[in-house]
Length: 392
Image (cartoon, rainbow, N blue to C red; front, side):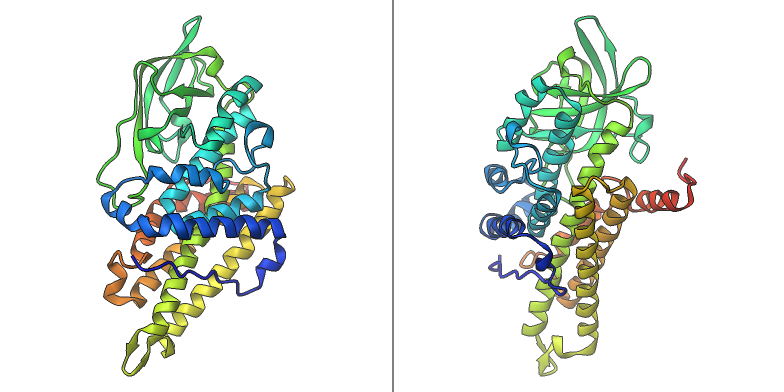
């Protein structure tokens, strides 16, 4: 693995829009990624293994629930800080950012927003430190883009609930201590339940043979007559809007994270273009390579402006779900395009583990699908501007 010489592009001087605290938080995360993630990530990706030793460090840099209030163990940071942390972690690897995103937006967020005080105090402090790792059970084998069609269900048995069903494509599932699971009650209403590892009938088989997110642990959640205590039901919100609210937070983090992957690919290609000599000059001195690099930095800059503005709107409580969908869709597609162009610039070296580009490209093939596919986000924007729901 080459030394991590990453230098973040800031073509429009966007650091001027950040506070000193924002920059300190970002730079701390960036330094941690350089020190702890970059030296090991290629090896773990090749072995398709999640580096669990990174969990304490993720907690230290605010990677777990940075916007959760301090009274529950969070850092109490704003939404731009959250985005910057996700950007830096994904600059290291999308799979590591997935672990952080799931913990923050899909586990801690619903417990904070939809749970009661007992649940918040029981789970959030341990999730914030990484003592507990969580996962989020929404997607099912036959219900991905249409989560409202889920079959997982629970019945009221008097002193407990009886949960049955299955979820798949669940990040963190193989080693998660708790799962926030979405299931229908006997009336067909969707509710969230906290399921703990060790509950009888609850298993988490790992998903193998992935070409993408290889340094992330993915699995299934299987519920076979699992007895869930009634106090584990999230009481403060039900219906499909509850899990979708979590996805808004996760998609927002992804919009920032994808910029990190794109920046790493761009920086690698730029550096290589200055070092690689062909026909007696650096390839960066040729028109075609300059065209690629100019388009990369343009698209990165546009994405940076998009997410910064979205972060301001999130801080003000004015960001809409459709605005978040636009940013997620645009930025992930942008990152994929940059990864592909950067890979071509490196020629044969671009497919090797000596450089990060091919790993980013494979990872982004998952990111463009999860938390809402590229096409579904397009239709969300279409519905928002026309008023017609084309996917129903």
